[in-house]
Image 1 (cartoon, rainbow, N blue to C red):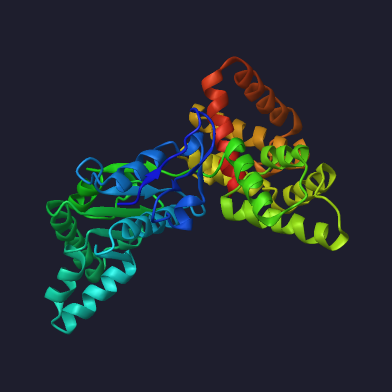
Image 2: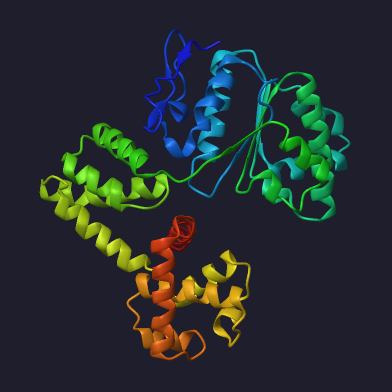
Length: 362
């Protein structure tokens, strides 16, 4: 087994994990995975796999939106396991490829060989499981096969790692038996990096690329940038190219200019805000734009109007016209109503902050 440790700073700070020691260095995918307060269970997952305790956390179910590192972490875990168990059999596939391969095996009468391949693995990775959530016959057949595969792997005390954009409880289109097996292990939500994690990533990448990036600029970028790790790396590249061309450091002014341009280019418009608010409150967009005065609708409409005023450059008249032709006074009243609630109700304030973040993420 790989002799490895996790160099974990105190709770609340970001960390890179793990750092390999001894004869077998850990794969770069694991070494370079930076986790922070938003992804605390990553430490648990890596420790569990490297210390070889599949009975404690199996399957490991990694879920989160695109760009949060699901595949990066899953493939890193598989590589780390393989590095520490040279003769172990590791299988990695996507849900779609698993279904396709099964269909080909049935057609060519090679099902037993297919089953040996997956059921006798020491570690198996199944990515993008949500793609099996369709009711076509081949997808149902693949779900049933995966149920038996998971059972066989658990019986052998082999590791199972699954990735998906949704949590198991949100996978309404998969078989209940498969859903229950996925929920029996460790479910690990992965979130986009928060400010402290972004700071750690920027500092590491700046060192690796030998960027001239003053601490004040690093801090400003970490606090002002919202997005996934790939998007953050892309932002650093966009800042790096003109800086190297001109032989200058990436200073705070350059970062501010970049963030302002990015914000203007990606700023949500009123229809996007209204659609997000309707979805958040479980309503139809037509209800928010219609005449209904039902309390649930009126409250959701007021939130959408408040956010439209805050996020966009639209006037109150323009916002009112979108929401059913409401006049300036009515629109202003909605904004003031929400302002009062935000001031007096901390739980409501947190809910609206989460909604606003989702709107900015698109």
